[in-house]
Image 1 (spheres, rainbow, N blue to C red):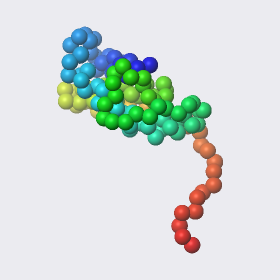
Image 2: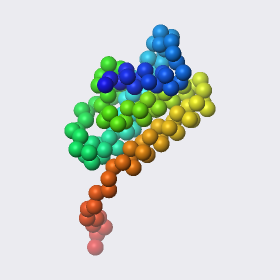
Image 3: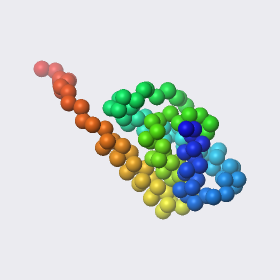
Image 4: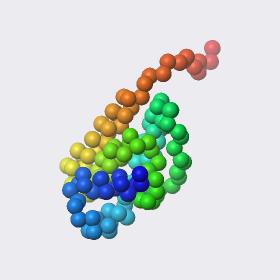
Length: 129
């Protein structure tokens, strides 16, 4: 799955049906939003992958993630990513819709986090005696 798949889903979430008009400013901003959302969810993605035995994600750097690039997070994060990207694409035009979409992004990440099983381990002693 590419980041473009997430982007097209985000466009649908904000009610954009004519993709030709969206291929201007929004498509220019999407790679930056994509990189940001991946950075925001990277730690949770690592924990999710470790808990479910999914291989490590390919590392990415920078502020830009090409729309044709493979989506670097686990597939489970794709719906959440679409909410984030939709929120960022509509931020200036419809603050109320932005709030709803961003809340869904947060809820989706909370749901993913809740799926990660607790791992029992010893507590590290970090204070000097």
